[in-house]
Length: 251
Image 1 (cartoon, rainbow, N blue to C red):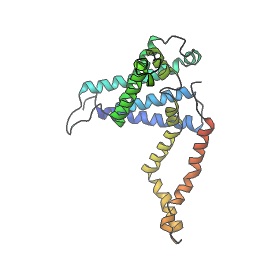
Image 2 (tube, one colour):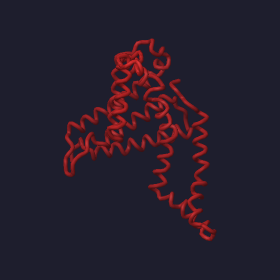
Image 3 (cartoon, one colour):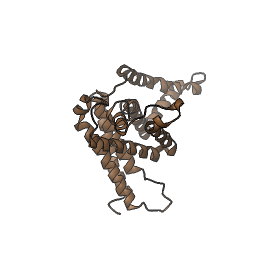
Image 4 (tube, rainbow, N blue to C red):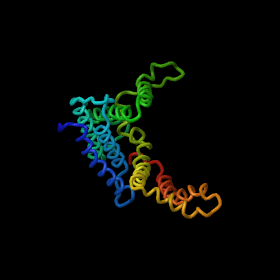
């Protein structure tokens, strides 16, 4: 088996996934605190790396071997994803203190910002298909060419530097509320659900509910409500924590 293969990528992704889960548990539960922007950046870049390692660029036919150049391209994409996170973490102080839309965007930030937009579109295409990509591309075109559109929908237009600054260096862009919610809340639910599903612990709650309600009138119909009631405090606590934190832009 060749060194550069999807099977070997999957082995590497296995350890990256474990590291991401431990990272999320450590900082989400509260063992330590990490600046919100760094956490969202590391989270998104880790997910990007996993997608590029696990999801082929195109659907292969049965028995078809994936071209080596596509595998190497995925490695390059994964490396760029890591570089984006490293840039944000290393230059965090400079990013926080810069004056938005006044200070010039450096060449490095511009290149990495464009790479982040393109890589985000690519992982979206690989995981959900073309519809969301088309919507995002139309929105980007509207940002570029808004000053050339009919009066009813026109705007002053945005330069490339402004678009990169908004999407890459500001808290309302790619690292905005959706990524914040995914990193702080959704990932914990998905990880906990995957643990219950793979460990078969979810069946225990249902078995206990059936045992407690088997002699009650309408027991079969009542049994599903007990597992939901047992997990309600966990859901309520997570929701309360997220509500109290509110929106957390770059700070």
